[in-house]
Structure formats: structure tokens, C-alpha cells
Image (cartoon, rainbow, N blue to C red; front, side, top):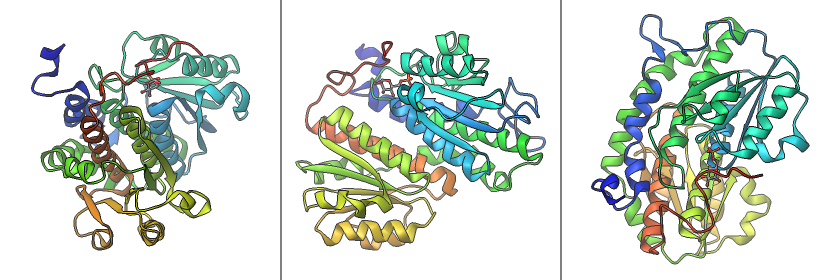
Length: 363
Ligand code: G6P
């Protein structure tokens, strides 16, 4: 097992550092250099032309990737929603033969997600799975499978598969929007070069991260809060999930604007607030963060150098400049590192947290 970790102390850290490669593999051959369009192997242009709505189903970290994909698709003007797979049988919106259900599951074996996909299929929906495992149950049972090509992930807490899923869902979303609208979505032109630059942006981030120092600085805090807006919201949720999974400390993620509707009651000087900025309504997010800061909470801004939040925050985790649709994915990697180093300081069994399994094959 030690050999498999190479120079790293844990698989999780190795897998965090594998993300530039994982993303390059997810993108490989999927952007047509001729016309700059998204080319997904199993889907001819026009495949999704008759779809009227898209439902994403997933659990855990994959649910956060699904939420990311769903919000991105909504921004592109497509009716879409992300649902927890284990709630699907009791809370699914209407399903018809013009519904596309996208099951997001890195293992392809999560019982809740498989059941949701089977339910959708029985109701007449078309199904696609976005998965890491060729030959998995999800890949066999879905009408079509899109593979994220992240390579094996050993650490129970998902890292590189989240990033790869989110990128894959961005590509799929662009294809769906193009088919439905009969033209390439307006934001694709600016998005494409940034998508292609993601492996390099991540490499730059990983070469110089202050996450370890920040984990040390806020060790012994009472609770850890994560806030974000728009596509930063699923990143805040994922930041908190990762933190609680591997440190066993209390962490929660909120939509930035929700902080004042309840969670602010929990804020003290012992509750650092990690604020994700992605270039969309950042002024509002900054105001929300300052409301916590006024109550004594240290604010850690996750944003590019030179961002206004850096001057106001107590600490800064830098991300390279990119498109708003991708900034959250870079922020997420900084948050993965903070969780990792915080768990390491506490001497937790990072790759195998108590009570958790890599994939849960029971309901
Ligand atoms: C388990 C793991 C989580 C994972 C979830 C969904 O609960 O501990 O890390 O996000 O399953 O797994 P999947 O394979 O469907 O992505």
C-alpha cells in the first residue's frame, strides 16, 4: 500500500495532486479543435434536441458535483435540477420520455443512485451516467455512460473524482444547451480556453498553496463554516463535507446569503468562515463574510490575488484567475488541502475515516 502512495503520506494527498492529470484526461479529445465545440464520444450533435428537462441524481460528494452541473446548465437556460438520489423515490419531479436523468457516481455502484436511475428509467426517462468506472453497474444499466477518466481513487474521501465530474458535467451541459438552443451557448467562447487551461491552473495552485499554514492557524476552532454563492455554493457544501469526513470536526456549508438567516447565531471568534469568491455577486458574498467577521469570526477568502476580499479577510487562499464557471473548482482544491492538513494535524486516519465506505452498496 505504501508503494502505491509514492512520495505522499496518504492516498488523499496523492489524489489531490493528481488533479491536473485527471482533468487533462477528462478533457482529452472532447473539445473539437476544428470548431471549438464540445465533442462527446457517444453523442452525435442533436442527441438532446428533444429533452425538456434534466434531472441529476447523486449522493455525497457526487451530489455536490451534480448540483454544480445543474446550476451551470440552468445558467445556460436549460430547465434542470439536482436531487439527492436517496430522496428521489419520494421527491422526484415529474418524469417523462422527454426527461434526461444524469446519474453522477464515481464508483457506479452506489445503491441509492442506481435505484434512482432505475426508477427514472422505468418511468420512461433517458439515462446517462457520469462515472469513473468502466464496467460498473451504472455504466451497464444507463442508456449511455460518460467516463471521467480520473484513474483509481483509493482515499475514501473523494477529491479528484469531484473535480473531474464537475468538468465532465460542464462539457455535457454545454452539449445539452447547444442541442436544445440550436446554437453554441454564448459563454462557450470564453469558457473553452479556460477549461483547456484548467490542468495548468491547478498545477500552479498546487505548487504554491498556503493551505497547510491556514489549517495550523485555525486548529482547535470550534466549528468551520464554508460559504459561497451560485456555483460557489456546491463548493461550500463540498468544502464542509470534506472537512467533517476526515477531521471529525464540525463543519457546515451555506449559501452566502443564508448566513444571516440562522447560522449567524453560531458565529464566534472560534468559527472560521471560508468564503469562496467566483466573480459573481462577490460584493454580496463579501458583505455576508463581513457580517460574520463583525461577530468575531476570522474570514478566509478563497479568491485570486488582488481581489478586494483579500484586503478585508483575515487570511487568503489564492486561486488563479479564471472564468466564474470554473473558479469554484479551483477554490475547491484549496479547501481539499485545508481539510487534509487539518486532519493530519489531528492525526486522523485520513484515507479510511471511521464509519465511512468508499462506496455504499446498500440503501
Ligand atoms: C460514499 C462515499 C462518498 C461518496 C458517496 C457517493 O458515501 O463515502 O465519498 O461521495 O459514497 O459515491 P459515488 O461512488 O456514487 O460517487
